[in-house]
Image (cartoon, rainbow, N blue to C red):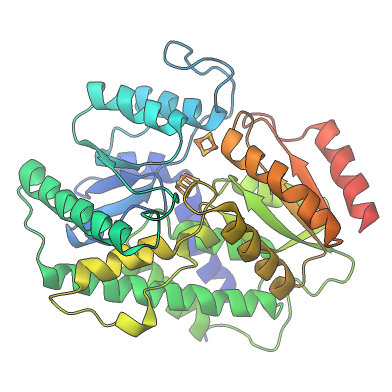
Length: 380
Ligand code: SF4
Ligand code: SF4
């Protein structure tokens, strides 16, 4: 049996200053992506390590040449990180159609950096929106163009077999992460370790993450509970744009919260959706369509209608055994704030308690947030 702590440390090592380490790595090829709707398997099939691009800075000194102060801090932070060279190790970056703020990041970068790509995806408007046949065909077309981008810019020819091989690896990763979630829900792993392991998948090739997960599972002591069976902790579902910031995960834990489920861009929204079972495995004819169907099955406030999102959140809430929902939204993110405005009274009518918090990206331990969270937890 392996030493579980030593194995866990391998994940922690990956998430500790990942971009600095990549900057120092010679000979590896990295490609940045910003969103769950990117066909990451194509980047993988091209031989790059797909790297999730998150903001780096913790201060508030973002350059206001490109963004007004009253615009999304996360987007400002992201652009600042690029301009300051934090992502110079990337061989290219791809942005997907999300909000105006992220589009502005792309527009600025595209003028200043080589190999910055924009992946268009439909919105949820009917009848041609996400999940429709038209939308899936549109995504297939865009994936084909993305494949050509690698050929034109890097002289890399991606074959159908390359994509199928990558899909196999991604499928295994989804299944291993589901197993990890089962272990977490059984209390065999702590909340902090759970999110750290998942975060590591954002910075390494998935076959490496799979190997680490398999090693971890083979060394697991299935008799020893370490995690979320603490009755004293308040169980919450978290929704929003936390962007894999482990300091916040630690903060919630310190406040007596057990995050029993999430609806976050870097965690469940990212890896919680597999390939549709009825069309897997893919063949030469339907490979890209299967990728498109996986993309269009994902749910986030930008891409699906509010009824669908509401039902999805309610289902998650009941399945997880949460006692309330924490909406954690960065300042000036209208998308999620408007969604909360639509949902809050519905949750209230169902007797579900919610808390809406808009922290500042650079300011972690606010007394005001402490007080609001403490008051919320007392109500549960
Ligand atoms: S909100 Fe949706 S579209 Fe925007 S980055 Fe997150 S997953 Fe992508
Ligand atoms: S936090 Fe909201 S406004 Fe900011 S980049 Fe993400 S979706 Fe856009």
